[in-house]
Image (cartoon, rainbow, N blue to C red; front, side, top):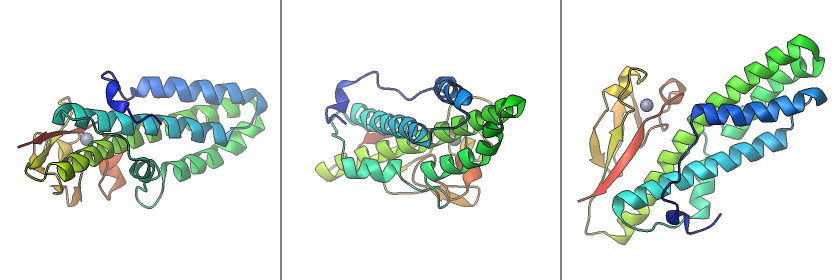
Amino acid sequence: MPNAVLNFDELNILTREQIRDKVEAEIYSELPEKKVDRKRCEDIIFDLLTMAYAYGLNKAGLELDQSLPVNDGLMRESVYGETAGETAFERMTAHIDAASPGIESGGPTAVDSATKLIDQLTVLIDTEQHRVANEGILDGANDYQRQHPERIVMKTWQTMLDDRVREPHEWLEGATVPLDAYFYTDGDRALAPGGFQSAALNVNCRCELDVTAI
Ligand SMILES: [Zn+2]
């Protein structure tokens, strides 16, 4: 992982369609062998989450106008972070375990099982990359705050402003709080999108933090 992540102005996270294409290509290439390569799936997830973290750090750096280097330990903590007691990799393993008997059986059942697995891994990666990207923004903003104790870093909850935004997140649209404060909604709280206790409030979330220093 290069330290000069901030040189990439165009750093972005993948759309759901791009994730799906990647996962589909991987799973379909393994169908003839009737076996899903867990290590390769793990590598894909690790790469995408690492990229999402870098995207978040980069976004915070652009908004705060300062180069914020990657802290490898914090990045790993985020990539291997647990949601409701499980890491992305544990969830991946559970999905592959569930799909494997169908895939190994071959025939039309194999395609059904593979399709279901592709859907599950796509949602998993999409959800996790948003959590990790927002943690990258938080980590970057915290780094900036430590370097500039005279400033006050604030964070704002931004939804995608379309009709797919769930109501509890719509309530948070534009909410601005100090960096270390929680956002409260629907009986739960989070430091950033993807950080709720309830999986239902995290899955499929596309919200992002904006950060600013006053
Ligand atoms: Zn959301």
